[in-house]
Image (cartoon, rainbow, N blue to C red):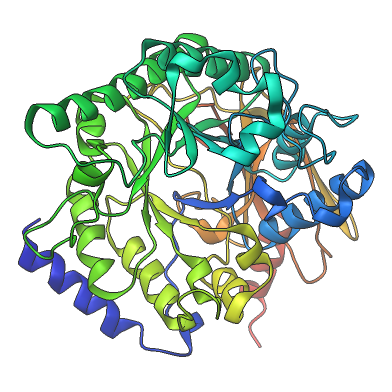
Amino acid sequence: MGSRLCLSLVTCVLLAFPTGGYGQFVETVKHEYRAVWLATIKGLDWPRETDKGNYEAQKAHLCTILDSLEAININTVLLQTRIRGDVIYPSMIEPFAPVFTGRHGLAPDYDPLAFAIEECHKRGMQLHAWLVTIPLGDAAYVKEHGKQSLPVRKPGMCARSKGAWYMEPSHPATVEHLVALTQELVGKYDVDGIHFDYIRYPEGLPPKKGAEAAARRANITRIVRALYNKVKDIKPWVCVSAATLGKYDDTSRYSSYGWNAYHTVYQEAQEWLREGIVDALFPMLYYAGNHFYPFVSDWSEHSYGRHIVAGMGTYQLHEEEKDWELEEVMRQCHVVRAHASMAGTAQFRSQFVTGNTKGVYGLLGQLNPYPALVPSMPWLCDTLPAMPRDLTVVVGKYVTTLVWKGTEGVKYNVYSSNRYPVDVADPANLVKTYLGVASYEEYTPSIVYPRHYAVTAIDRYGNESRPLQWENTVVRRIERKKEACPP
């Protein structure tokens, strides 16, 4: 798409969605990421500072967060699993983060990652383990880890910049360590994705040009490639994604004004897409106006068939940040959805969403009135799973129960409609996603809510089967009777 056409698209979308009254212009889609970053560093989103050591309160708080996200049809949680050289699960490689117990290296009496995965899956949501890749924290944080810290255990691969430690991307041990950590996590947990953040050089290092800059970019790409290949060796269906700076480079439409992924932190992210060593990119487009819209178009035009999920600066609504008006986020969401090759949005971060900063929770609820499926990954597998069979529906006075037979290794989506056959392409008919069991119950007073149903199977790659339909013949008899007896 040429630059003139892209700008025309943005202009039309902005005119179509004026400020105020955004709910009446909603156009939904069936397949898109509706993601939220859920930060554990310093307990920003979870767990609360007041819940340190109170594990039942921590569990209850996470369930409250997930219930709130489910209510606005969020389908992906990016849970911060590696913070700064420490993790939120029992690891043989790195120490436990202090956010749950208050002490570095001390684990709580439950596994926070396993608990979060289970609770997300109960709600039909994916969990992607968010790993902060290169940074290790400031000197004070590293010191508190003592002998367990990487600068003590593996000093050769660690370096400092502006008082903070990081893993030197050029050192072979850095790749080995990150690969081992990824192998442990993917092998042990039923995660739907691995999300690499800060997979880049620290900003503020002395700039490099020419061959030296190319070498830095090659170092980062080598890490990305090694991590991608390791994940696919273990569980090929696990989505591998990375967060990048929101601006890849200067574009023909607009300058990045010296802050971009390619030159500032040496992420050749569009080459990762071209090579196929990421399944998705989450560019952090935490900007407004011309710093946002032209760069959305740039990412959209260079997706190379992989998923581009726009990282949304929802936190900028807060008065202590940029104090954006809500309409800025509304317009941005609509513009992203208008680009056919964009795969959805990710809100940074959970607390600003569930806390309804300037009404953003309500906005997202209106933008997403129905559930959505995470887009499939046909470059990994495009074979449709077998259709469910033997669907039985029992319509009670208040509850309708569906039971069917399926196959191992899949989950199920349920659709319902007052028309037969149920149109499974219509997102308004999607009522439940990613069921792990072959049954479903729905509150349906039969007198006012007669429905037809369809069930599909969906595999780990996002491929969905043909629908198994069920016709409510009672409804058909009522309709025929009405036709025979005109008023």
